[in-house]
Amino acid sequence: MRHEARQVPSWLIFDVRQDMSTYDRRPEDYITGSAPPGFLSLRSESEKDLVELWYVKPLERMKGDEAFVCLMLCFPLIEAIIRYQSKIPDEHDVKFSDNSPALKWFATFMSIPEAEARATWDGLRNGLLHRAMIKIDIDYELTGAKPGRNAEFKDGKVVIYVWQLRDSVVSHLRRLHKNLWKGTSSPLPRVYLKQ
Image 1 (cartoon, rainbow, N blue to C red):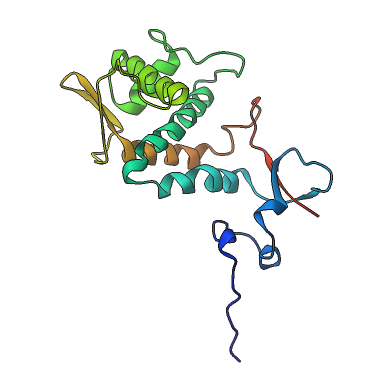
Image 2: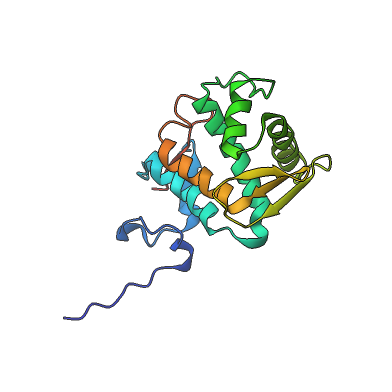
């Protein structure tokens, strides 16, 4: 007996983990966040599934000229990792003062000296997130090379190995997904399905 493959709508291809009974759902049937009336059925997704769906898979698909967008996503994730690993409460800023745990963590993560780590954080993280571009006061080079480190400081500028950095962030997300948003003022939202 031959079974014909069921045609899956193109708008569902992004989420292959759904069971066959939900393949007839449209994107507008889902809502993420607090469920309003009529959206009572919770789609069961673990923290791992959500982190894979929202962060890991999109990051892994990025390449080439998507480096700026990749960095715009990586730096808030790096900040979440720093907060968790340095035990910085939500109500406190992540401080990059001399000898601060956050500065030391970031310098080690990037493989650059602490003085350059502070300028790199300000130029990249703050520039990309507040102005959608790296600040002009930092000399930098972005490259797709993967030398086994996230960055280096050479010839008076910071060299960011974008895809190596991305891979390091993804590795941290896969290890820490259960803890990064737990007990914070910004927990991962739930996904609801319209009844």
